[in-house]
Amino acid sequence: MFGKIEHLGIAVKNLQEANSTYEKLLGRPPYKEELVPSEHVATSFFMSGENKIELLAATDPQSAIAKYIDKRGEGIHHVAFAVDDIRAELARLEKEGFTILNKEPKRGADQKLVAFVHPKGAHGVLVELCQEITE
Ligand code: ZN
Image (cartoon, rainbow, N blue to C red; front, side, top):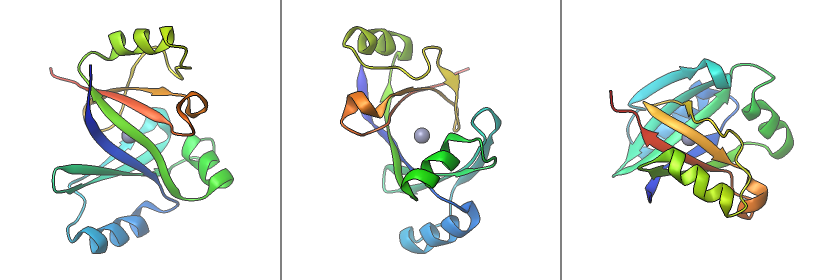
């Protein structure tokens, strides 16, 4: 099942600059920074109340984030939903006709198994599914 919005992902050019901007905005520093080598991104996470914001910066020009920023500039990049069974949800969404970008869930930042749904089928929004890794 789909649960709450787990976080909003924001594509930024420079993670350190964006960290300092969001620290001023939210009144607190990021609680975590993490490299995701498989995605060629550096991430940082902020809490605002019970909501989470993920900043993503490319570490390589081949990164999807670099391409996104080249095309559309900085801004909201994806909406992530918490799911309890990512494989079951991916199978359901595929049956519903959504395009799944990675059928095999991969390890994302912040102890999550993640998969993405193409924005074309979701009215322009890149949707991330994330399931907490408990091990
Ligand atoms: Zn995300």
